[in-house]
Image (cartoon, rainbow, N blue to C red; front, top):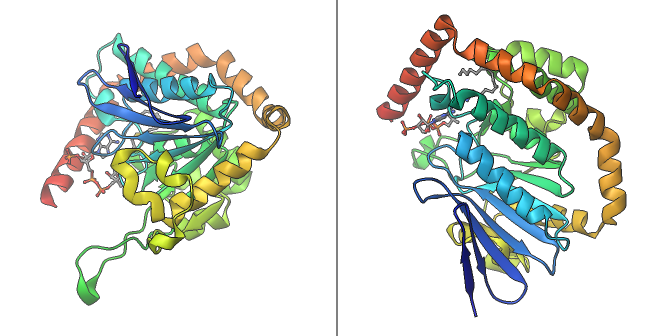
Length: 328
Ligand SMILES: CCCCC/C=C\C/C=C\C/C=C/C(=O)SCCNC(=O)CCNC(=O)[C@H](O)C(C)(C)COP(=O)(O)OP(=O)(O)OC[C@H]1O[C@@H](n2cnc3c(N)ncnc32)[C@H](O)[C@@H]1OP(=O)(O)O
């Protein structure tokens, strides 16, 4: 028997056997993230689902945190796959509409929600595997870096144009803020330093580099790359199909999702106390540093974004983005 429990933010649907599904709803009733949990395997899946680009709004940040916390509160769950319902965009970073002509009360709340997302994801007791099927610029890259393991699509998915003129789809990842005329906040920049090392990060931050998958792998920004050519039905691995939310069922034969599933399974088998303790060894002091400077960081961000010159740039940036998308 299926039981559905509704509350203002969370919708749980208790399904067959040991498997639980839940969605976190936005104000407009859409599911910003969809969560599935398999208690037998000890694995969960958190699928970001905010069309068109999984950009991070206040509500999206809160939805990811709420889902993660719900999964963490289940002692049977040890690992989670963070994925996207959009096969070409993991996350486009901050929702730029949060930054244009912001409401003075909402802007600090928005920034606080991003800081909280960092604290919750980077400090999660769960091992988080990022399944990066598409682009991950700026705060999209930050999301991936806050996870424990990153698998990126090699980009040979389908293509556009057809025939010999087939255009390859090549996703990119990186903190490209300087290309947008801004700087990543210190905690985000430091996350890049901790992920790829000082010199590579120094260069990448200065240049605002967006890395294609092979380069991202060679500098350690991702841990593995995988083709997305769907395998034959016989290669479907047990358990993955049940974990995928209904909107992503076609991903069961996707090698990238399979690799993410296997990695999450491996994490789930490691003695949890030892795994969590070792995660704290490398992450705790950075989390404390961030907490200590949190208010200062919020004041700096709000002061920066509301400057007249920055607002002018942002308006132009959003207009360019919209007209690019209209021309398609
Ligand atoms: C920009 C100044 C910010 C100032 C902040 C101050 C301090 C720094 C603080 C924090 C650091 C983090 C910063 C950020 O994350 S800023 C956001 C950076 N991200 C981007 O600039 C990405 C922009 N998007 C793209 O490059 C592309 O969309 C893509 C992700 C490569 C995908 O390309 P594709 O061709 O597949 O799609 P489209 O470009 O057609 O886009 C589809 C659709 O999505 C909308 N969209 C894309 N990105 C965003 C976004 N970040 N926020 C809101 N909306 C976005 C786009 O407009 C299209 O919508 P439409 O309705 O027109 O179809």
